[in-house]
Length: 146
Ligand code: FES
Image (cartoon, rainbow, N blue to C red; front, side, top):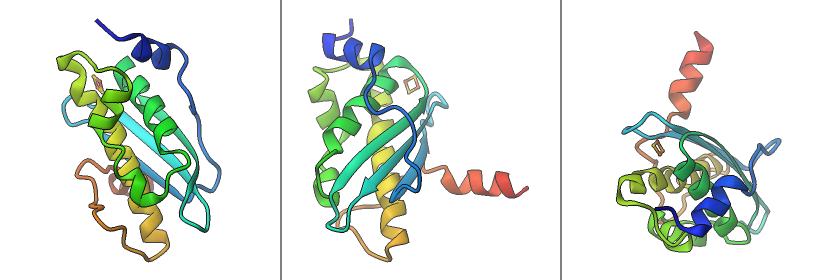
């Protein structure tokens, strides 16, 4: 039911972990299942993504899609990274079972949330980027303050 690539990225996920002082970090939640993904990006002064790491508190499909998404955004500039949609990640993984397609949305949204954070820190606007609806960073900040 899962492609070989999905199994490979699930059992041997690439780029798991954190980046110290990331250029951008974003955390999103999947409204359907409650799973969470955090994405860290290291972006150089030319706007090219040098490093991408993730932590996923979620299912195997979420782990595999985050792993593939980090591989796909590395070496891309921020505008190109917006093209790493859930569809692009799914294609790179040779698909997911229909019931698991919603899991791949986490990866796309986590990239967008991290890019949003990067743009905010640099007082810039990334053409075509909108704040992900499931961005939960602010909610966490509120919880930490309380
Ligand atoms: Fe939650 Fe897959 S079941 S992300």
